[in-house]
Image (cartoon, rainbow, N blue to C red; front, top):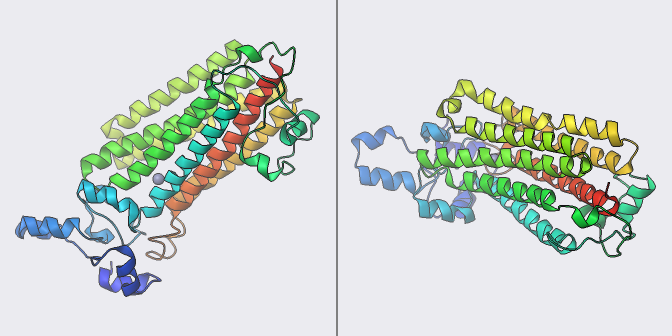
Length: 366
Ligand SMILES: [Zn+2]
């Protein structure tokens, strides 16, 4: 690997002077951990903690992607690690993509709570254009007005004779929003804090896995609960199955042996199987309610969501584009940042589907 000074010039599109100004008042430096054993420990720690380093200088627990060459934080003190939220390094956009995603879902949750109060009285549906299209059978995603794609249908006018509405639970909708926020916040924290120490990295990665499991499991809740609101047997079987599956995946990801390289694919396959098992209730929904425009529209959203997540996993696994030009995407544009944006897009698409599920049952009951 080229030295840092050399690679700054050769592998970054910025000049060294520009980068020094943008990143920190200190130079990026190459730190060799072998020097720590024979040099002055205090001086070594000082050197280790205060600069950005290149890939070759990292301890093993921080070596994940050799195509990202520079701008690593390595074993920084906790205070400086926390403050690095506001400085530029190769995790800055990984932290902020999911932190902004968290705040987007926080705003969506606040907006939804004003429309669907958790314990509020049942109300009916007005002539919102999206729900109008759903109910008229004209359920093309593309034809939904731009504004209505972003928030939720407006509920104002009570509809008489809707027996289920007064008993309809809204918690599955909010469980999903909470699951998405937990996942995005844990991911953001994991990217910010993991460079502090091997122990912190270990704990944060487990919380990140728990967040991914939480997002997948909570995604099932509005789908299953509202689709099978009038079929408690299937509703309970699906909810219990995915919850047990999710808890088992979290427990397995806590076992240290699954952290070893040979077991990492097993963990990845577990997450993939858990997500793919959503095909079962979705297929069941189409068999039972395929004549309903709400079922068709939500399945369309779920297909778009699967496309976003699937593309994200492919980009993540292939590590493109940095594989093609190592060092050129260290700060912006590398695969993990693209993966994060696709995750937020997928989660948002499922939010839109969840709004339709809730609106469907609020308006009609069984
Ligand atoms: Zn991530």
